[in-house]
Image (cartoon, rainbow over all chains, first blue to last red; front, side, top):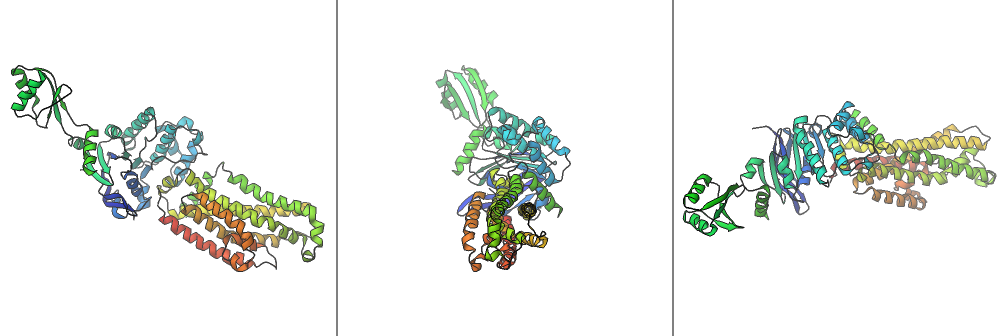
Length: 301
Length: 247
């Protein structure tokens, strides 16, 4: 098992009577692209702010790189790059000057700015004031800021927020390339299922401050309700035949649906064909992430 | 210490192309120019007033200048202190700035220092402008260097209380404009409240009024209370900022 880069234990944050994060045990393995998924208001940003030391947990502990954040904050943050919700810039300064601020604080050589600008493809606009940038360019600049100095962990909170589809695709591809380019662990939060499905290899699902699931994407998909879809004729008689054979069958939109994980499709097909039914379609319908997500969050709501 | 200097450099970089620089350069010039016009038009009249008889021309010039400067300067320092923090609120960049490996205490100190350095520059520039203005007016006495040096030092000490309070308010509220509004009201009301020495001791906005080196002015208010409140507000500001939750 990979060592953990982020580990929280019973992490809780309360705002007066409202509990934003409840006993969260987050485990992000080294080298993972971890998707932190949850609807708006689920507690993602609050968790991320705690991970970055911006707000203090009410109870619980945070360990990054096996060090306690409350004790080794400066050492830990020197290895962490971040974007918290919309990236922030000094709009009256150029892209280069904005990165110069980060470079000076991190004591990096000047070529780090060029390297970061090159990765996010902003080199040709480096002397332009940020107030003249599009949202996508600002987002890329935010990522450049987070990348400077070979950070070992990148925490990106909703980095595709507010972007048009082309911008989303561009940023997604950039993020997916980061573990390889930077050799970094990436935690990315989003409320968009498809985004996480496309990018992440590990997932944590948070809802109403509680972590409902944590594991690999493959493990998450096993949580879905699988079913076999059959198109056979005559439909009604084929359904009756299968019911007699002990299958649970429902008819929807001219097709037979057989829920269950252990149906042998080869045997099913043979039984239907040898009994004189015409089979024109036979497929396995794995539960998609949306169904799984709704199923998990529905259990809590 | 190196981290503090780095943060200080960063703070000055953030002020690039900011209106702060023209403000810092032009405010002392404006103050000196208004005083120059005042003396240019009314020198003989002021010279002949009974209570000015014992004063040198330089001293008379400073007394007249102080009426304008003791109001103008705190107002501008209030604007600078708010602006230095407003930059972070405007860009919503506290979260980025404090997610970097920096000590919050030093971040706060760097911002406080920028305001103090800019205030000191304004004070020194103002004194130089006044000397030049006095020379142009052709005062018969030689320049009273010790008078201007004393005036400058008193101002630097006194203004620390206002800087401390404005930085505390700006950094620890969720809107730097609130601090700006409080500062404006504070400076405006201090003109009246400073009539009472007892009250003026405890009003940082009034400490500047007591910086004129003159036997009729209780400079102890500017020096002791200015410095004491300056240090207290600095400490309170640092403590508050270290505990501030960044959303």
